[in-house]
Image 1 (cartoon, rainbow, N blue to C red):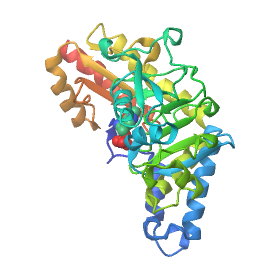
Image 2: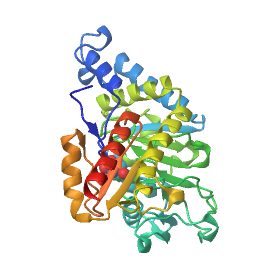
Image 3: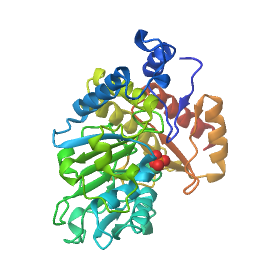
Image 4: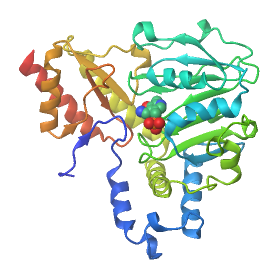
Amino acid sequence: SQDRVFNFAAGPATLPENVLKKAESELYNWRGCGMSVMEMSHRGKEFLSIIQKAEADLRALLNIPEEYAVLFLQGGATTQFAAVPLNLCKPEDPVDYLVTGSWGDKAFKEAQKFCKSNVIWSGKSDKYTKIPSFDELEQNPDAKYLHICANETIHGVEFKEYPTPKNKDRILVADMSSNFCSKPVDVSKFGIIYAGAQKNVGPSGVTVVIIRKDLIGNAQPITPVMLDYKIHAENNSLYNTPPCYGIYMCGLVFEDLLAQGGLVEIEKKNKKKAEILYQTIDESGGFYRCPVDKSVRSLMNVPFTLEKSDLEAEFIKEAAKEKMVQLKGHRSVGGMRASIYNAMPLAGVEKLVAFMKDFQARHA
Ligand code: PMP
């Protein structure tokens, strides 16, 4: 609508307008129960219906097999950086990390505190613009798991397929924070998938963990209860007070994604948006550049720089005047970044590319 901007932020990020309107209409008095979702007991029948529907809809969206638990937790993906090794490893266990950007690196460093984590490949020397061919990976057969960050939010590098874990238990763990529910995923390939909600599926404050049930129940004795998957699985994510309103919002987003035809349809839309943006960059004759290897460019986060880097501030300022905001790249890499998650409409990307072409014509 007219009073809203196109928000290209990396997260918290834009949410679907119809979801926001639905939440607005239900805010004061949720479905006639006489109170808002923020006020209801997490153990009451109203909230139970909300969390159960959210889980059922997420299971339908991602085709989550019965042998996986779905947990709605707190603490962001950052907390999972610790929870994963605490739940899957003893302190002396080796684990493998494939580091394709800053988030994979942070996950690796946190795991060092709780087990013997090793980087088996790092894209750092190429400024995190690549993903290796999986054949060249030297996986440790004794590793407890192989960890990847499925989409590097800052560097715009996304796995298009997944490595086969060669460790003895064949466990692949993925941080899917920034491409969660953006395309179909074969959940059965993973031991754990985790994601902060605030990019594709809701507000910040909710972290979704999808975990194969047989991996639950082996946490290190020092594991805080809040990080123990067993506690949360046994209590259906209601061990303590969950982020009720955030879970409700995620539920509305899941409903919306299903109504749009599910993740096959969502992926088509995301591909179309990414395609026109990358095409504009690649056909600009070097005026705009995206450093990421073409084969692994993210559908969600599109980093780019200007050949004349002194124009970057002007670009961001002019875009903001035209109601396109949050285009500044992450402080660690500079340049620009357009995050175009599920809820960014095609019209937003079309407006951005039209602006980019116009900006180039005026400044080339
Ligand atoms: N992993 C990825 C891929 C991310 O993009 C982010 C947040 N930008 C995080 C982890 C950290 O998430 P949180 O802030 O929810 O802890």
